[in-house]
Image 1 (tube, rainbow, N blue to C red):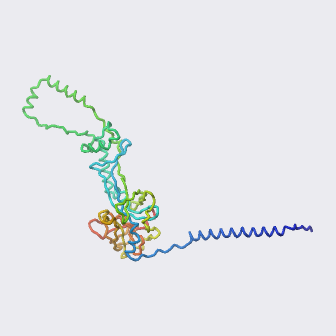
Image 2 (image 1 turned 60 degrees about the vertical axis):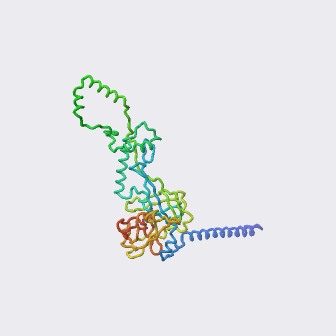
Length: 381
């Protein structure tokens, strides 16, 4: 048997290596435990249970700064040979509507109604009315706008000549405008009867020469004219603000015609610092079958828009309450809260302050019959 000789320093080297390995294992263990602890905190910590606010006043105080007054100005525009101009004429005046929205994150995102963001598509009746107006505007522009007008003068020319515009532009501009009475006196008839052939020939020749000297105007084709509706500007005001409006942009609207919801976003993508409590989508009632008639419903919003919101001390949001009147049909729920124009897009809470719906419609003739899109549909956006 062969016996290996051990060098004098081999035991010492082996001992050092073993210590180094133990240190490595210890460091790896610390890193692993730390990572596991972080992941456990982030992903495996149970969701903190929401506190029930309990009273209308607490709900109002908690969320009043998160609910905004929406001001949306929109109008008709024309694109003629690629040049876009606003149409501020008698048939197409700019309009301003008011609604309500509420912040749901720190990136400036707000939930409101689709019809607040796209009022021209709010109903089938409204859409058809707008489409008819668009067709008429297009034809009227084609009836007066001539090709010799420069692009820079389109807007002023159309505005100054709008009274002469006609939907049936094929009939020509101002046809019959200078037409005299067709009735003739016996005296004029007699004079015409005794006129010589030579005079008739001279008159005919003069008329022909005058007609030939009048330049024939060429009109811009309707095919080169596009008319549409779009936002001029959309802004929001916060509770307690004093005529301070924040610029916003439409981010998205629901593709489902039965879901009247949309997302509005602050232009700088930052929720104002004065909004201390957003209406978190983690604290919504996403099971609408749990909403039963008789349960409390509380709305915070801006019914009547600026008319009721504006006070001597700035803009003030309002609170109204009632109760659920009918079970959810999967899309909407009915409640007895007092509401009217301007409150579209208001958050509706239960007695604990959980979001249950987004107010969207009611009856103008009578109060107490209003509807909200159930909160579960917000997540689909």
